[in-house]
Image (tube, rainbow, N blue to C red; front, top):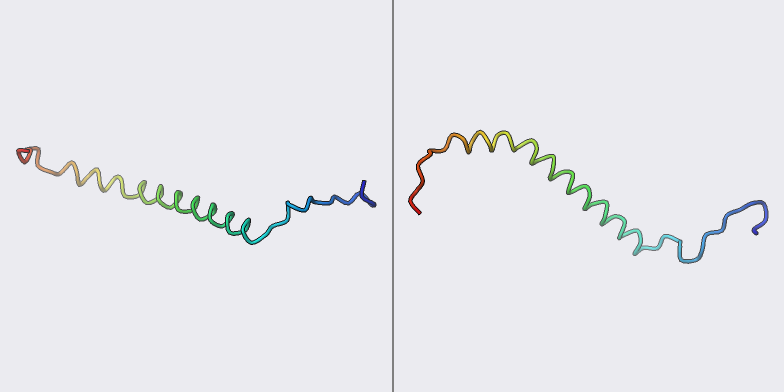
Length: 61
C-alpha cells in the first residue's frame, strides 16, 4: 500500500497524445451527431410543408 493513502495509477493509464486525440475525435463525432439532429428537427417542419404543397399528379415514371 502506498504511504499516506495515495493512489498510484498504473503506467498505462497516463494520458498520452494518442489517447487525447482519440478522445477529441469521439467528442467531435458526438458533437456532429447532436448538431445534425438539431438541424433536422428544425428543418423538418419546413420540409414537410414544402412536400405537402407539391402537385398530387405523378410525372409518369
